[in-house]
Image (cartoon, rainbow, N blue to C red; front, side):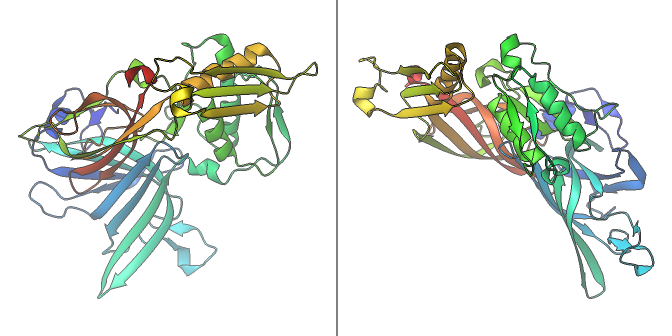
Length: 412
């Protein structure tokens, strides 16, 4: 969760008033910064929403941000601006279709959005996303104009980047070497105030920071898609944070991470929980994992693990043989096969639980945060969950969230 709160001038505020205000009746406020390619604010690039007196001090009409941890482009947004002086109209100089862009907004302009609340008479903000403009629709009706924007976070820099030739990383290449080379080749800022923040993976064993086998990229492979695929496989969360900085984090088990926020049922709404739906599924439950490695010249490597415990609620005799098979020519030793087996067993030997909730909005949340949810009367839940996806409204206080938990056989 984002902890750094600022006032309308960007000055950092060192107190907890912002987060206390979220649990009370409050008024929403929004600020937009128009940035250059180095993420620096342009002259006159601030746009504000209504003030406390409900007078329109600038031009934000509506907006929503959608956050989803399963995507490379984690944050997307829609934004509507009043455009009475045409300053937000994407246009080219002298109406020349090949001329330079003029005006404050144009395709791929970088926009940072802050969402906040009033604490007394003072607006306080947290960043909720740094975006590039994908689509700009300019609408004119009865002498009034509006600009509707569709936005994507800076993963967009990698979404159209492709490998142009055969590229091989040998076995034992550090994960971070591959990550750095991919993002650097896509124009991601690597140094300075907004430079990439790469997790050292220091809590892992040395072997778990490197590839077990060679990694091959072919001409035409998407750099963004491959990076998302590999980091997911390696247990690394890779994304652009709300300030537009590329970040990686070792994705530890939810029970090993600090709780970022708590939603709970309460008669006076300070728990911020409005409604809940709790769902269970065994789609990802397997009780037999087999790993076959065909990479050794001397022969095939095979290891397996199965739940045959007669007292277990997920044993093969009770549920049937639910097998998950991993077969790879990149596995050549028993040690490699056992590493894959243990990882696959941890991922596949489980029941899944998800909760969909309507809450009062906390705009400081980040996908993959650990969230505590408590409702003891009807849903009968009090536990920690991984935040999968959520939205942030720029004009209202409602928020939809989806969280997921892992229930292991021993908990059934």
